[in-house]
Length: 101
Image (cartoon, rainbow, N blue to C red; front, side, top):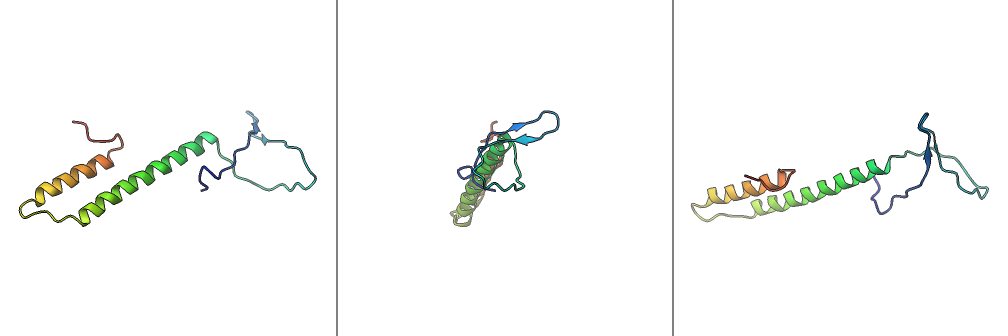
């Protein structure tokens, strides 16, 4: 999928009956028709936002995994460290944000 900064949007007219799409432009005499796949801009924007959110969550989770991999708790403190990392993981996995209790 192309990123939102490279995507070209065109304005077209779609028939509410048959779904035909038309976007007439001035012809300079070299036209060649090719099949293209189009999506509604709202659907594209949602997919782009979803992808951005997923990338952000993946980066946050990777930071947590790095912290887990490189943390050595002091003697007798492993459980406190584990529970702190567990709370951070829960907060990252909760789609509504930090755990509310």
